[in-house]
Image (cartoon, rainbow, N blue to C red; front, side, top):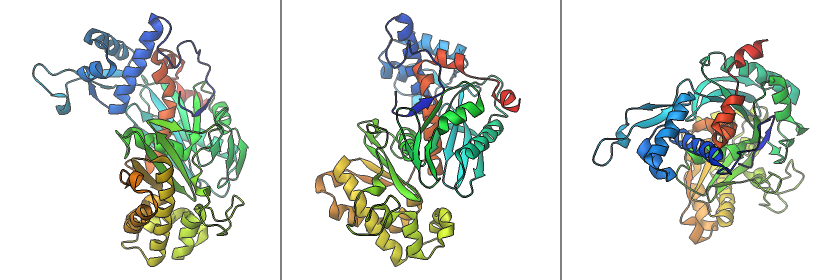
Length: 419
């Protein structure tokens, strides 16, 4: 299981998270593993599944047939990528258009985005609602409930909702999903996932995670970090946080609070930070620092990314911040030795303008050995990194046991939410 908090699930644990203690458990585990391969690739040949899973062709064929009977996948003519080698090309497997889906929720500082996401990470319908001031968790819960009703409104009658995933810009306690603090939302000790599960009343699992952690997950699986085992996603969302993938696994920390890189000590005696300390890295590269540097109104700081996108060349004030960004990233390079650092949020808008300054400062400060192997990239998923990461955790239980997850899923979501 991933280190993301989950609430609202009543699923039996009899076949969770392993190969199973009996033949039925092994079969369900193999079904989930095969389905996850299809989900990750979008379309894959049965021959590739045979190689990847180390099972014989007849077993793969039986698993594919069962998933097809469940309405989860379908078989199709092989893609050009699958036409390899001599002999008859293998049939491809892809998600069924009317198959199961997840609801993904990305709670930002100024808006909330909700989407219906199908297998393969396909966004089928989305909605956006602005947030004003510091909205109460109960307010946001009601807003999300209304948005969920909209995004599932045109779902095929054959499709099943299997889970809800939520990303929030704050510290999420690993054990129970409590949002300990989301400073830019004004939340403290908010049981948001539990509140949302109760408001929806659907009986499906509701999973919650930190936005940067989910951004890292999505970029690793289907964005700028695909095929790499060590990835850091640095998220600029007023403050600065990071999600870390190390040796292919998400790093959450003992309580789930890993990644608060914005509060690494950077300049002793520097500017005061909202955390109560002075000289945090965030005070030099956060949205407030950038807005002040370019004279952008602080009451419009949430539109900073759009303002940065409007620049064709960087003014001197931004180049200085690029140097601070590179020096801070060097700390991450020395500490974690990543293959790639993905810069998201407003940092994704800043980086193309100050790339020379960032790279020069990083390589001047970082140790030579780890700096030789790191690349800097903008998100491959654009502004959807967190949203698609939320969808990934919503699908988790489907890949553990597709049969049980589909049995617990809801096909009557729209009608239930309207009642």
